[in-house]
Image (cartoon, rainbow, N blue to C red):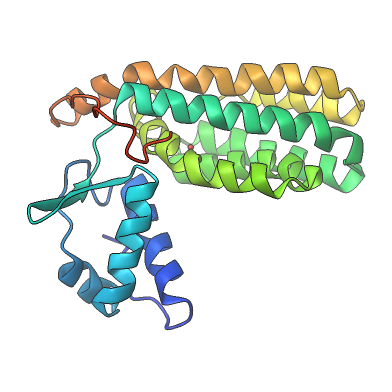
Amino acid sequence: MDALRPVGRTLLRDRAYEALREAIVRGDLAPGAPLKDADLADRLGLSRAPVREALARLGDEGLVESKPQSYTRVTRPVSRVVRDAASVVRVMHELAARTGVPLLGPEGIRAMREANERFAAAVRASDVEAALHADDELHQVLVVASGNHAAAATIARYTPLIRRVERRLFGDAGSCGSAELHARLIDACAAGDAAEAVRVTTEIWAALEQLADDAIEVAEVTGIPAPTPPASSSSHGSAAP
């Protein structure tokens, strides 16, 4: 469980949250896995308090579910939840493209091209971690350029629900996106064509919404029973990326 290494004592609540979220997204903590705060605290080298706070936050984000006096566990992928997350993330990236392109300079374009080169190389090598990291770096350039902190926070919150499924499908299908679509996005940004950048962004992220339709299939492939969608939204607001 590489993602659950002991962490430093600074901002313990946040460090525990980041470590647990990464372990869930990577699959080190599998869907349906029980979560015991004492065990997790021991693995992370922390007290139970920051771990409990981290689990509560992950519950708000739809990665953990709890029933008082019964269980706390990793949520299983639910098609509707993943699709909702992908839709929200798509709209935020469209906004970032619309407002970020006019503010993007040569350094930003160069950063996007370099990230896409790393992405393409990682896809060829079937290196899912490197591919997803490069993909995040590429799109983050526009998010930062836009200066929209609310969009950035929304993307950060819901992308893990998508990434959790996307990572599994990458392993099955050997691909997690299109470097060609990225190249079209970069060309639009370089030309200062915000409208075209938004159109390509829509195409890129709309494709991820299809991952929701594969969520149940992923559960079957991994031997995890297909879940019944929750009766209430209970913080699943969207993920994943």
